[in-house]
Amino acid sequence: MTGAERWYRRAAEAGDSDAMAAVGQILQDRWDLAEAEEWYQRAADAGHTGAMVNLGVLLTMRGDVGAAELWYQQAAEAGDTDAMLNLAGLQAERDDRTSAEHWLHLAAKAGESDALVSLGVLAQTGGDRDAARRWFQQAADAGNASGMFSLGVLAEELGDVTGAERWYQRAADAGDHHALVNLGSLRAQRGDNPN
Image 1 (tube, rainbow, N blue to C red):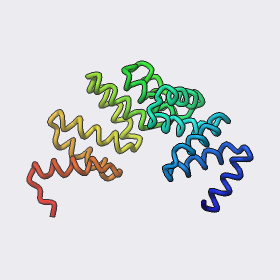
Image 2 (image 1 turned 45 degrees about the horizontal axis):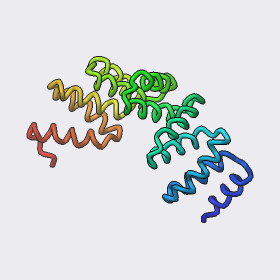
Image 3 (image 1 turned 30 degrees about the vertical axis):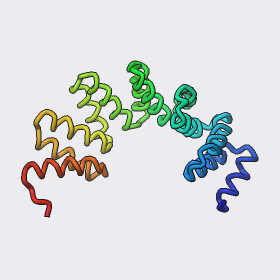
Image 4 (image 1 turned 180 degrees about the vertical axis):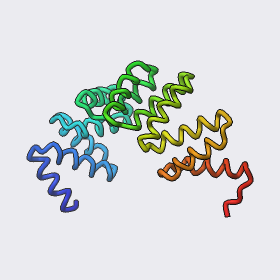
């Protein structure tokens, strides 16, 4: 146990919910998931929204999606955008588009650009490419690399290789590794030599 962990544990045992969540994170990073869950539970019970989200993640990993959803719901209602994204993801998986869109809109309104990408994905899976493009564009305008990548995919699907290459390059420059693969593939198809 490190000195920092000892300090966090003392503060957590004294009732500090931030310290409880920190101990949970330290334990999760070591893959001591059972004890991490206990500390997240204590912090979540004390109202720590970040711990609620992390507890929801552990519960989802364990297969207890119903309990995870309850924690995501509570944290989302308290304004946590990570919880909103995770809750929307669970709802989308069970085809509850209306609820998923509700939480994604709230997260997007709170400035979460990943929510814009997720709204684009929902629109795309619903067959509305124009709406998908608008959501991806908003995400890209906010600097979201996944939004840029998604615009590249849409452009490539429509046969706009120049547009696809431009978006893949922007996404790659923003750190999206998938965009590098797609960019390389487009350039190889064109016969560009990488050397």
